[in-house]
Length: 217
Image 1 (cartoon, helix red, strand yellow):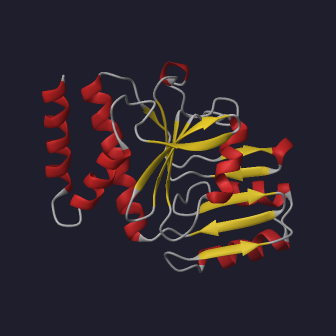
Image 2: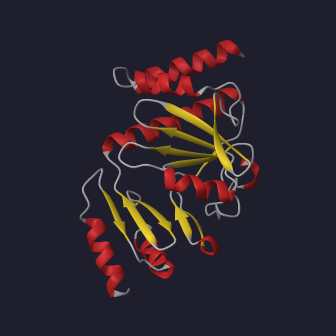
């Protein structure tokens, strides 16, 4: 481990929840070394963009929303009869682009069969069908261009008030009312579900979603 990498790690480990740290002038090798050192620590999110490294330490609220969105995706897959393979916030990186990112969550739905049983997937070669970004303590704007370059077809973003779905078209993301992967599931519905868990149990909200989906079947 280089002195610089050790210094970066020390700074990262002292970050408060909800904090963001940006470090300029980080080499690709240093970025990969940090990823290796933090491999067993799933708390931090690292975004690398041509030498600039952004580290985010998500807040409890951030993770609360993120995990609920993942639960919603599981319910949708079950009730709509589709496959779903989740890879959490696995690192997506591509040296030729000098970029790397870690979404809050990512899923394979239409292309789930390609990754079933794989504990390790190169997400730059087999990009997920959905990437989830919870933009509460930080913005995912820098990541979107990278996801577009990799060909990620759908992005879900939530800013603490509103969920927005995007589809990839002509190299950039455009807002859409409903999900591509889960037909008929609207961004407005996800917004409503996320609003409800501020005063209702998550299980009750998920059960209501199941009933609604079954009634439509």
